[in-house]
Image 1: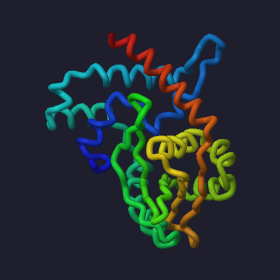
Image 2: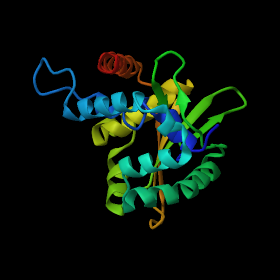
Image 3: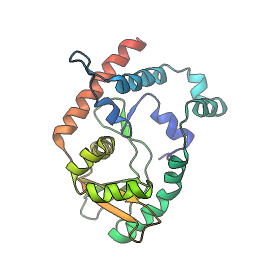
Image 4: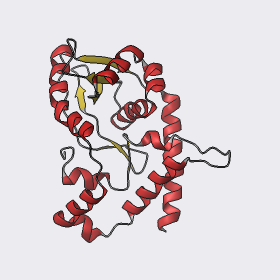
Length: 222
């Protein structure tokens, strides 16, 4: 499977609703007739543009790298998180006795144009599947999550987009749980682990919103 942040990973994600952005689609507009809010509409336009890209650009490594540079969003916080993720996963595995391995993009078996990339996936001897979502925020944000996030409801209230990301991981892999991990190496106790379980009502809602978005996109690019 392709490594995260590789060219093949970015290619595979083109035009697909991904777990990290599902939360954007869950936001309705201010008016009743607006099925999607401005953030959701912007994401839908992006997906439509990606699905209608010139294949020559997509398949040429140099040209595709230029495209990624042009649309890429980076910051010190994002770079820091990417750098710390491996250490967080190692500590988690040591504490939990799991063997979480990083995955590429996992596609949903039934929902078209929907995939998610867990920061870890494992299948225990008894067949139980689990996934991992790692966040490496600033110290004050680490303490916020440590204090406010204890379960599904806490994560949904504190950071809805992370809640939907964890749900997406479970939807695409069929996992029974997703451990939400917050990691800050500057702390005496640098890791906070919360087990998030499938919310089947939200599974249905996520599917409905993705299918609605796909219908809009198909009309745009027809």
